[in-house]
Every structure is written in structure tokens, then in C-alpha cells.
Image (tube, rainbow, N blue to C red; front, side, top):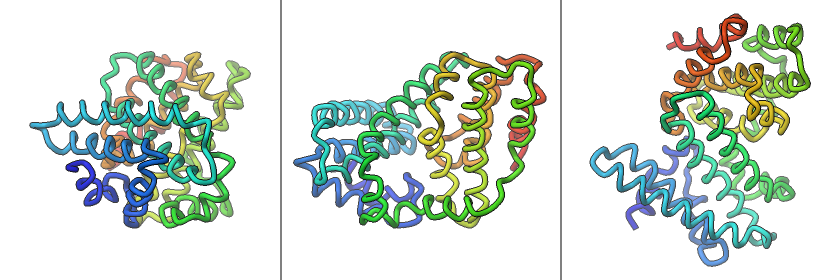
Length: 292
């Protein structure tokens, strides 16, 4: 009951929502029998956030968060082949909350090398994208459901697409297009880089809203092409440099607890791994570390 009460009181904050999060909790409670994995994941995320707020009980809360998440994922795996009109909403919410949970664990875990980070990050990408894909055919319904007030990023994205893209990623884009090291992964890396620019452009649309930036950043792992993930898994240097740009947008929103200081650490990991040939391409992420 502690974790449920905490979620009721604080979920809007720890999910960076401008609107109230009560609809999420209502769906979890209403579907506790036919989609129990959602309620378990709500409790898991609540416990995980509590672990970042209470130093004394942090270890205990993290352990309980892991246990609840493990149980939620087990229940979901048993039910994933029977997702229907009755359960696509709780399944979509489960995928979103699970993604937040695993992303935080991935970003905030200590990684001594870039290779260690990439391995964990690719595992996160495959898990989150895989679970989310199960509800893909219901996307139109979800957009017009009671969850619509929670999906403001979609509205801002539509406004952004009507305007010219920003210039933040231009130097790397030109570098990748002209580089003699161009490979079959270059196009995928350019696409992933375009989505970084998309995140930056969305954030500029409504700078007064504290929720838009974090949600746009959390969307990036879901909109990059599979080919980029494969290039990242193979440690292609161009893919690693794009990852440093992802680190830069994480760093811009480091006040959000899911990200913390992971962005700056990621930029440094990439910079010391890819070598001097790529230092010019890394100018923007490295410069972002000095931004207030």
C-alpha cells in the first residue's frame, strides 16, 4: 500500500507529467485482474523513485522495485499473445512504465567502459521496443482514448513537423555524408541523428513546459531505425558518435530523475573511445557540457 499511495501522490512528478497521472492508476486498478502486470509495474516504478529519495531505505526500495518489475514482466509474458481490445490500453501503459524503469536502470548503472554501456543500452532498446510493438496496431485508438491528455508530445511533434529543422546537428550530418568512412550504417545513423534534431526542435516549441523535453528524449529510443541499433551493437564509430548526441540531450534534461547525470558520463565515454578522427564531429556534445 505504501507504493500505491506514493504513486497516487507523486506519479505526475516522477513521470514528468503536466497533467494528473490519476488516469494511469485508475486503469491499473480497474484492470488488476485481466492485466495485473500494469499494477505491478506502477508499484515497481513507485518503489524505484522512492529509492532515489530515501537514502536510508534506498537499497530495500530498489530490491522491491526489481522484484515487482520481475513479477510484472513474467505476468506480461504469459499474457502477451492474448492482447485484445480489452487490454491494449493497460498493455500500452505497461510498456511505457517498463521502459522508464529499465531506461533509468540502464543509464544510472555504473559502466566502466563504453562497451559495457552499449551492451546494456541495446538490451534496453530491444526490450522496450519489443513490448511496445505489441500494441502498435492499436496506436490510433490509443491516441483517441482517455490517455490523450497524457500525450502532449504528439501534439507538439505535429507542430514541429510544419517548421524547418534546427541546425544543432548540421555539422555531424555533413561530416557523415562527406566522410571517406561512409558505410551501409551511415544512412541509419543519419536517420537516428535526425530524430535527435527532432527532439531538440520539439523542446524549443514550448520551452515553458517542463514535461515536453523529457518526454521527447524518452521517445528517441522508440523512433530510431533498427539498422541504427544494429550499428550501435557492432560499435560502429559513426553510431557511437550519434550516441554522444543522445548523451547531450540527456544532459540538457538532467534534472529529470530518470536521466540524472548519465548524459555527461556518456559523452565522455564516447569521446575517449572513438579517437581523434571524430573529435570535430563531437564538438557539439562536448560543448553542451558547458551549457547551464
